[in-house]
Each structure stands twice: as C-alpha cells, then as structure tokens.
Image 1 (cartoon, one colour):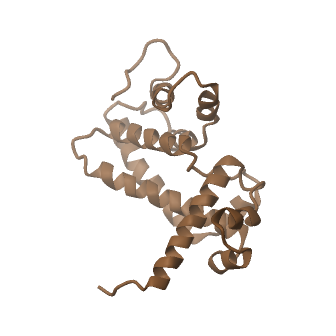
Image 2: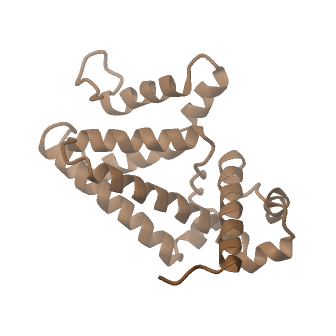
Length: 208
C-alpha cells in the first residue's frame, strides 16, 4: 500500500477540522445564519484557503451532512456485528446514538423544506447515495421489528422511518439540557421511552 504523503495528510486534517467546525455551527446556528467567514476564522485559515477545499457554503454544508451519514453507517456496521440483538434493539441503539451526537453538538440541523441548502442537497449525488444507504439499512430493521410485533405493523414503514429521523433534530433534547434538571443520559432515556413506548401510561416496555 502506497504511503500517504505529508501534504495529503495535512490537507485531510484541515478538511476534517473544517467539517467539524461546520457541523458545530450548523448545529448551533443553522445553515442560513452560518457564514463562510466564521468557518474560516474558527479553523484558523484564510477564506481563500477554505475555498480550495469547498467552493461554496452549500458545498460545505453538504460535505458536513455526508460526514454525519458516514458516521451513522459506520455505527450501523458495529450494530450489524451484534447478531444476537433483536431488530427493535438495533433501532433503539441507532436513536440513542443519534441523540448522543446531537447533545454533543455534532449533529447538523436538517435543512428547511424550501431552503437553498435543501435544493443543493437534492442534486448532491454523494449525499443522496448516503441518505439512501441509511434509509435502506434502517428499513430492514423496521420491517423485521414489525414482523416480530415489536413495532406496530399497522404503521407504514416510512412513517416509522421518518419518526426515527426526526430524533436527529428533536428540539426537546436541547430544551431539557438547558433546563438543567436531567443528565444527558437521563434525557436520552426519557426520550427513548417516549419514542418507542409512546405517551400512554401502560404499553410495551422499552428494551434496554
């Protein structure tokens, strides 16, 4: 295997730093408020240098979204190795991971329906490919969980999928964290229960 040159390593490290900053700013402010200038300033590079890596604000945000989806797929791989886990346990593990990433400030906020970012993402082949991979892999667990009765089989699978996706941008996490009454882990447990058990006082218990 050819050894990666020092220059390539430096460029990759810089891109990683750029994407980490973009992720944080997208989580804190959202796409419309984030600026390329503050990304460059946070990373400590000139704006012109940043444009050598990413040619636009939309490309920056799309790359950050792809990076998060890649992290999700890597996490799915670790779950796949747990062959003894039930499908519902896999889904719960995904939602738990998603909320952990959001509470850590590393989950970009999803673009608004009519935003410039959404328009750019809908033509971004790599983003769409990763999103489809994530959806397909979750879909397998959703179908299996419905087949064994752990998830209501009367619910359309896409509704279950979108419900799980919505946990990635659930504002309740931030509100509970700011309130200071619960630890991050307690917040996750509360919202996991609300997501999988519903709000009824009696029902199926959360698998832990």
